[in-house]
Amino acid sequence: MGNGIIGKVLYFWVFILGAMFILKFTGYADDNKTLVIVLIAIALIYVVWNVARAKGKKKQAEKAAAYKQPVKKGTAHKKKKR
Image 1 (cartoon, rainbow, N blue to C red):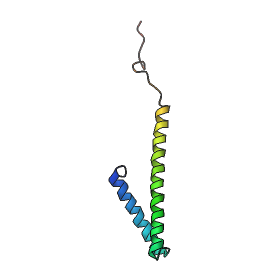
Image 2: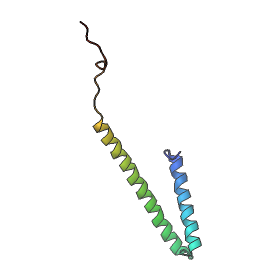
Image 3: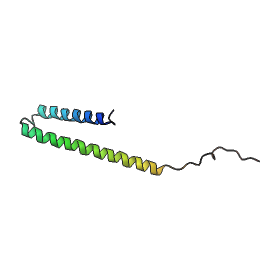
Image 4: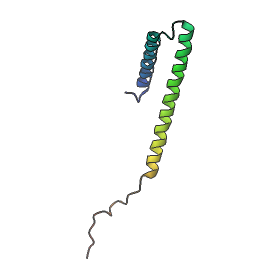
C-alpha cells in the first residue's frame, strides 16, 4: 500500500500526527509558533528522507541490472549427438 500515491500521503499524515502527539506530550511545542516551525521542519525531514530512499532503491535496481549475466538459451544440459 505504501508504494502508491495514496499510501505515501497516508503515511505522511500518520508521521505528522505522531510527531504532534509526541511534541504535545513532551511539552516542547506549547505555543503555536513553535509548533508550526517544528512541524514544517518535520515535514521537510520526511520528504527528504523519502526522496533519498527512492533514489537509493533506483540506484540499487540499476546495480542489480548491471550485474545480471546474460544466459545463452538452449545450451544447458544438451547431449552431444554421435
